[in-house]
Image (tube, rainbow, N blue to C red; front, side):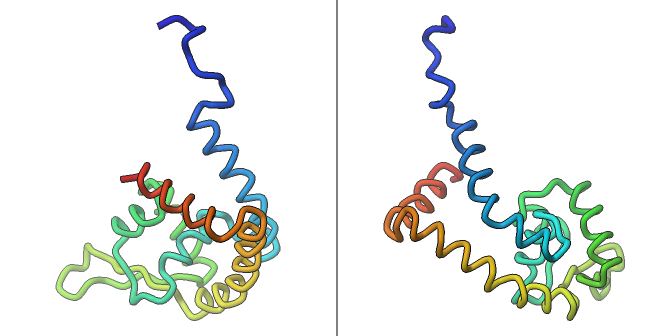
Length: 142
């Protein structure tokens, strides 16, 4: 294949997805900075909210974080008293990660601000197109 046969750089799907991600994250980063939390930490908090905890492997998969990164993130979140780890009964090698009370409080504080940004995005492209986008992205990810 010759270079001239490649699609235009702006039509490169990975780059288009990165541009879209950066644009979308521009809505949420100020909220995270205001609450002194990283994108990845917020992902972990969101994933743990409303459940009775999960093991690190499942959490890494759900949050799309590599295990070494998740390990560092969990250490920081534990130090900040936002999450807690508990041994699984009968198997001390396995740990369940749960949001601590402080982590739930942070979620409750941040979630309305985050939802307001989602409303802005929806207003920009419309609810129907946003739903279509979710479906298309799910199709690509499957």
